[in-house]
Length: 367
Image (cartoon, rainbow, N blue to C red; front, top):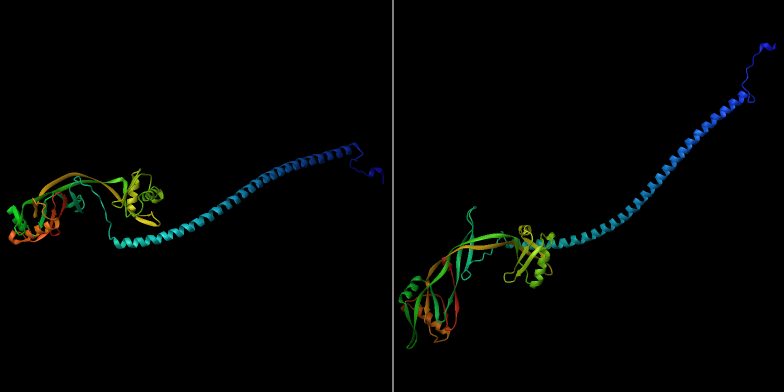
């Protein structure tokens, strides 16, 4: 075989220039790849560090929130426990009050069959006391009142009132004008007989209006007035009891009632709608009644004279015996038929030097 028969192609040797260049280029490529990988690694490290920092901050925040929640939970548990104890105590008190309310309610239901409204209307004629018996007509008409006279008649000394059972007897006595009353033996006294007329109201017009700021509290217990006023003020000034700011309050011991005035107009109606209230006045709870306060003014008063058909007035009676004996002698005389008298229903004698008051009212048979 000759040298011309073979053709051998060899890779560039490292020892050749081309080989060295190829090696250098290969190393450069590897270096570039390593540098890129280093950059990627550095970027990944930075991102990991950022995430680590974020997780660390978030962990701290979560720990703070957890600690705060634990504190709040402990405080809430303490408050809940305290509220639970208070709730148990209030529940026990409410049960006791409820039992007392049921007991008092049963008593009230047994005594009361319907709502009673009490209205005090003051008359413009204080010298003539009048008892009002109210009744109402069909809806749409105003209330009407029947008036029962209750008249005080002043008596002078040396006079007497005699009321006979029959009108004829009184008229017969009046027709004789003067009478000689036998005192026994040869003694007698002369008296003059006069008719009796009184002034009565014939019609009264009253303008009544519910006061928007006042209430009338009744069914009050017997206790110290100042302490009672303080208790009423405390109860009715609290919103939880339906009350409000109190302007004035006053207990009327004579009637056993109290008048309370509020600063606002809407408080009184809410209290009167409930009507019965449990108020701690004395040692226990007292049930009081709250009704509207009525302002009444007499707008028209008409009067008339009425002649008492069965009553006569004796005048000119001297002071010659003790009052009881003299009244008995007068009664005996005017009961005798021979003197023109008859059965006497009542007699009232006023001695000389004294004054008395006779009270006239409507007889039961005339009602």
